[in-house]
Image 1 (cartoon, rainbow, N blue to C red):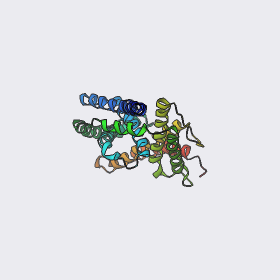
Image 2 (tube, one colour; image 1 turned 90 degrees about the horizontal axis):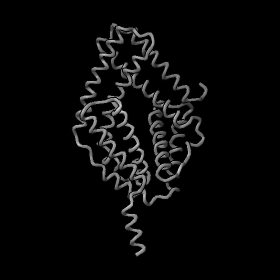
Image 3 (cartoon, rainbow, N blue to C red; image 1 turned 135 degrees about the vertical axis):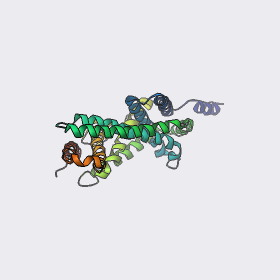
Image 4 (tube, rainbow, N blue to C red; image 1 turned 180 degrees about the vertical axis):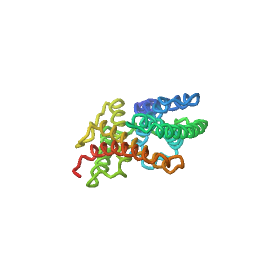
Length: 276
């Protein structure tokens, strides 16, 4: 009877991390439904934050179950995340364009209209994605619940040690910080920070910040995000420069590119911290 009671209790009680995952899943569905009634920048941001937090728990699950079909279960959420992200990038670039000093007003207006046109397309794409029904997500929660119930705190410590090693590998694997490592480094830090928050709340287990790291985790994450925003804006600007309407505005484009490049470089030097 004791063994039966233990089994039933384990079966019926949801693991705290699985409960967190269920909460993020519910929030994502609610935010997606809100976006169906109207595209709002703050709701898009909230949707992406919730999806990143869900993704962090799923990657924690994948650490313990490497063969679990992560992609098959997460693909629909990833598609929505990327569609929302494409629109979010353009919204940010409008703000960055407005904040740029010494603007050529004629070019500023024509480039603003260009970005607005791209936003219309990105909004239409997001609306098409929102018409597709998101998976309920129950299978994600059930898989997490079954796995995490058999994990000890020492198992979670192994995850954080592995993630810290990954972060150091991206940060210090070359004499200088490699641009190709920026995006995976940012993802690794986000996963570490999100899951540190998760285990602190759910399990009262805090692995601490990334060991032997020169930046506070949150500072590094913000600098990487800001660098990524400027890098993405420069890519969009390079694509716009090929358009026929851009030819008369060569000098203004050059000036904007120089300003955004200077901003990105300042973050780059702060990130790298190594002599050049």
